[in-house]
Structures are given as structure tokens and as C-alpha cells.
Length: 84
Image (tube, rainbow, N blue to C red; front, side, top):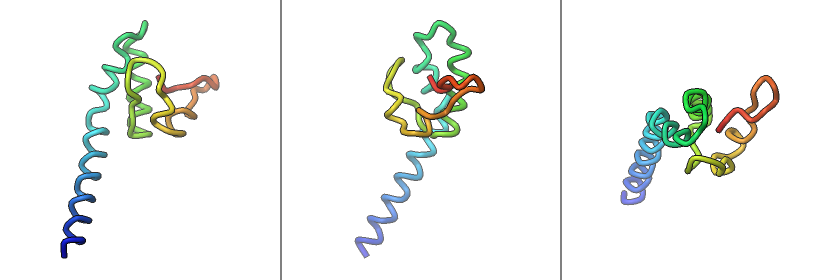
């Protein structure tokens, strides 16, 4: 019984965590792009990446590997990295 309860609580925690990250893409991207020379362009690209990959790297620059392959391998039509 205790194991079932623990499993249920764990499942609820992770489903809530994933939703909160996706729901806060705008806020996370605003922080990520705060020091960018073109914050509107950066925020738009970051929002797309956040929606698809469900992750925004910490800080204002670098750390892209923290979000995994989805974030690091997404490219523009010009084959440049899409995600800031």
C-alpha cells in the first residue's frame, strides 16, 4: 500500500513539474534573453524551443547542453542553431 502511494505521489509530482516548466516558457525565455542584443527575436526563438523541447537552459548564455539533444540539434533553415 505504501509503495502504491509513493508511486502515485511521484507520478503526480513529475506531471506537475513538466506542466509548470512548459507553462512558464514566456517567463523563462524572458530571463534567458534578457541580455541579448535582440531580445524580441531571442524570446520568440526561445519560446519555440521551449514548447518543443520543454526546457530552457539556465543563465543568459551557453549551457545549451543542459536541455539535451532536442535543444542543441534544432536548427534554422540556414542550418544555424535555432535555440538561444
